[in-house]
Structure formats: structure tokens, C-alpha cells
Length: 462
Image (tube, rainbow, N blue to C red; front, side, top):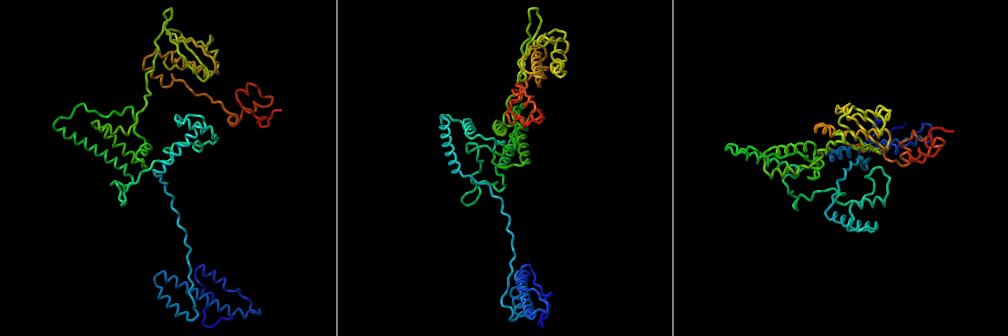
């Protein structure tokens, strides 16, 4: 192939960079065999391509030199080396990737926005009351929820996805007002800690602790410290949980921050402080409902022969029982006039019936006469057990009554809910064959409360 003198081989002068290679491929024609009629025409093109590659190489060098602050020196070298062949410089650009956009900040709800939402809520509430035929003045939030459920029925499993109509204060979270002035300076000196309310509260608690300790140190040398010091009574109340404290301070707290705050409050509560400090600590506690009350035990009654006895009632599901426990007996137990061994053929039901007597170690010391109705055998045994346990409270001490209150004298309110058709189909799939074809009976359909298609039966009945 013809190559002009003074030019370097084509392969040794390849330009750098992908962009230069693409331009070179588009500008360089494909090589042709020497015997073809256009071979002589291709030789000058190769020469031109070599010159073009030199220009691209020099242009790339100029771009690199410009990035290093050597623009003038590289431009002078390019002009001296290329001579009249270099007409213009080809600049290559580097594709820059777009930086990831930061997450959007929490939307700020202004006071005017909240006021507007409250006005719209009150107006919508009046319209809703008129639609439901109620008095708008006495239309409460419970009535609003009931009306929304009636007007917009939803079968969504997640209750938070169902339509609601709540007060704007419950929908929009609480936010702090502007904490800096027109000059840009924050109002609080702990603003730049990020948790100004939390650290301000910690400062206040520690200041009160130092104040109480200084007062005690001044009274101790003079022997003026009272002997009977009043300590804050923490019984019947609890500390605020982390979520409640965050709602009070309108700040997010870590577990470590919450633990440190509770420790300081406990230290202040243990000190012999005055009523002001006790009132300060009580702001961070919530009273608990009294759950432990003494059970009223009926007194022991006596019949015409002077025999002591006591009665008790019990319920379990749909079964109702009444038990009469005699004070002196031989351990005989009768249910509806029948011995309990015959009435309850299942061992588990017998154990349920005798458990209160076994728990108090009174087997063989009392005679029990029971009357029960409704429910099945298991429910009747549970109702009799509750009735016997309540009747035995008249014959035992107060401590034993407290032991029985752990769960023996309390009814079990668990009842199997009535299922709809779809729920029954999904929950009792193994029993579907009993409600189709010749297997079905009126009692089965009444108990299951389902209407099933015979072609969906799992058992092939012919």
C-alpha cells in the first residue's frame, strides 16, 4: 500500500479515547485490494486519514494539557508540530453522571394551612350530619366514623387503608414553629444540638437535683434535716414511654436518650424534695387503673339441719351452671341428678370439674350438687368448674381466695365467632363435603351457616 514519506505507520498513531475512535472509524474508508481499480484512489485517503489521526491525537493532548493548566504551552507545541495541516482543535467532552437527588424533606404545615383544614372539616362534618339526618351540633366523632363506614363500605384488610374523616390535628403531625428570628439567629441556646427540648429538659432536671442536694447539705450540719422525709410515691403510676415522650417534646429520641432521662427523673424522685419537685416529676408519669380489688365472698349459709353450704354460678360459652357445695361431705358429685362419672364420659371433662377441689386440697371433704344447661359437654364442664370455684371461696381463707383469683374464679369469655359464607369456606375446608349432595343435613347447614356449591366438594360423592 502506498504511504507518503514522513508519515508514521497508521497503527502507531491511533488516537486516544472512545470518541476519537468512533470519529476515526467513520472517517476512514475500508481497505481495498491492490488490484482493484480504486486502489490508487484509496492511497490518498489513507494519507488523509493518517493526517486526521495526527490532528485528533494533538487535539486530545491539548484537552489533557488544558485540564492541567498548561494550555498555552500545549497550544504552541501543537502549532509548531502540525504546521499548516492543523486547521482547528477538536475538543472531546466527558459524560458526567447525574448525582442522586436527595430525599425530599418533610412537608411543613403552616398555621394558616391547619386553620383552613379545620374549617373544611367542620363544614364537611355539618354536611355529613345533614346527609345522615342528625343534628350537626351533637354530631360526635363516633357518629362521623359510623357514617363514613356506612357511606363508604370497604373490604380492605388493612384498616389504615380504609376511608376516614378525622380532625386535622389527628391527621397532620405536630411540628415546631420557627425557632429563629428575622436576623437568622436561633431563639434557644441549645438549638444547634438538634434536640433543644430534650437537652433543655435534662438541664432543668439536673438543676433541680443540685438545688435539693444543696438544701440538704445546708441543713445536715445544723441537724435540721427532718427524720421523716417525704419521698415521691411511685406506686400506681408508670413513666411515660418513649413514643409519649417524643410526642410531648416534638423530637425524635434514641433509646439511650430515653434511658438517661428516666434515670435522672428517678434520682430526683428518690430525693426528699418539696411539692414543687414532686409536681414536676409527676408530669412524666401516668396513673394506672386499679386492677386489684378484693373479691366479695358471700358468707356461708346453713340449711334447716344446720349443715353449712354455699352456692355459686358460672357460665362458659352458652352453658350455664349452678353449684351447691356442702361443708361436710364425702366427696360425692352429682350433675343434673346423675353421677359425674356417667355424665362426663371423657376424662378431660372430669378433670376440669374436679380441679378446684384438687387445687385447694379438699377432695373428699365436700359434696357437690350441680345443675347445668345449654352448650356441649366441654362447655358444661367449664361452667361447673367456675361455679364450684366461686362456691368454695366461702370455705377457704383470704390467701387461698387470692390464689384462686389468678384465673380460677374468672370466667372465660372466648366464644367461637359466627363466620360468613366466604370465611367458613376458607376456614373449614376439610368439612365442605358434609354440606353437599347426600352427605348434607339440615343441622350441618344450620351450624356451618354456609351455602356451598356441590361441584366444589373435596370428596367425590356419587
